[in-house]
Length: 379
Image: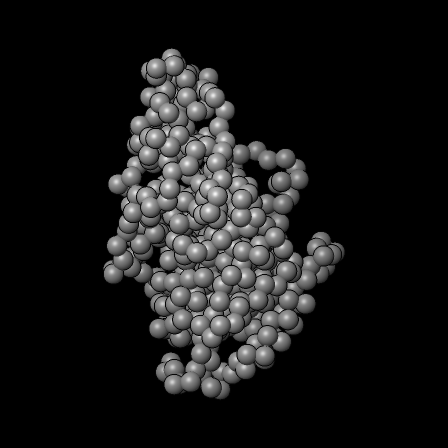
């Protein structure tokens, strides 16, 4: 499909969170008219995204479920009307060659391995509801008729309840050709081992084929990305660098992290200058499970997957590689390993919990940038 000289590529970011998808799509040349999310606390972080014409991507605070007896607070029809209004305001015109992409990054928790742990009735209900968010977006797709759809989610979405297969089948009925594939973000220049499912759909005669890697990308190591930041201690907030703050540690956990060398397993805690510092559950002979908790990253390797718990040494290999810094990653370091720009700020800026959730759940902008360019070339 030939683009006209004055044509433009527009995008809408559903379940936008902190704006990782929006950030990458803007880098790829898209004009993102809006991000939509139910969590209004995302707004202050999200609206930092500025399009190439100087306009800010708008943040829309809507619950994207249709309003019905099961979801009386659903605002899908209101969201659709608002998005249509914004498209008119930016003079979106297919006759002039303009194209529209809808990105759908529904909450991933229902599809993760950890979600297999027994949940409370309330959490089980919430996850069952969130599992359907990908399908809920079909109402918006049907109304706005985008030229392309881009989904990023965890690896397990290809298996769990076959939600992605249902989604693809319904898109096929609507005239789209789809492809879905599990990729590792490290093969696209993201400095972490991060497996994600990518799904792309086009209204074109041939099925798209998702690349396995970015052939032009080089993958930096952890020290390349965060080594320039000044050292801080556990519990510190840097006085001038926003988000460079770390979680405090108990005296016992300070002993644990100070006894671990980069890249080793937590079995090393059996023999330390302070005695056996292993957790009781790690003393029962099962050395094969959760061996990364209370351990450090390695400076010359990529990081493990940045999760919503990356500011805690108890939830994975999130200890700083510098043995003089006995702490987990700072919010700033996690942000950079997710490939957000250096000047991006997560709000509240000196908080840990909510920024960590936003960062761990974000689409790495470098992934969105690559696939944004890929989609742009095809539409």
